[in-house]
Image (tube, rainbow, N blue to C red):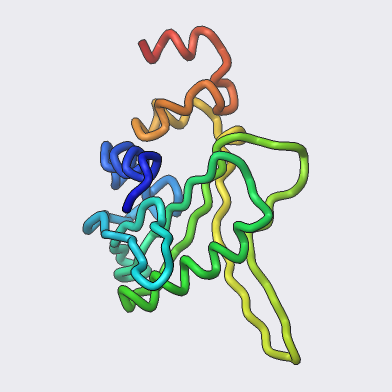
Length: 167
């Protein structure tokens, strides 16, 4: 069963899904096919938003959007698992994206999982977007209505003139 935050994230991204996937992937010719059901039956976890997309350069693939309120040391392992489960279920390559909403501390946030046991290696890269590092202007220039609720925490979003422009 979807958590309320998951449903809200899906609604936000569905406001302008093409603009969203262009922003999170930085692939200009990407086009959304559909927002998929990302529930994995064999584990009790539902990914935030899974989107089937297509690009002339990369063909058909999935964009896995994982939104976290705060960075967590558990995310590299989870991103590896989510990407693998997504690829297994849908038989398509996956572009995983971790979006952190609130900053805690100054530690560096990893953008990959890596393990090595007896010479066997596992690795999963993923894109990290920290909303506090995102310039508020992008919300209005692209436009990205999905980010409107986050304007106060975006870089430059604390500016009163920016917040009054939203109203």
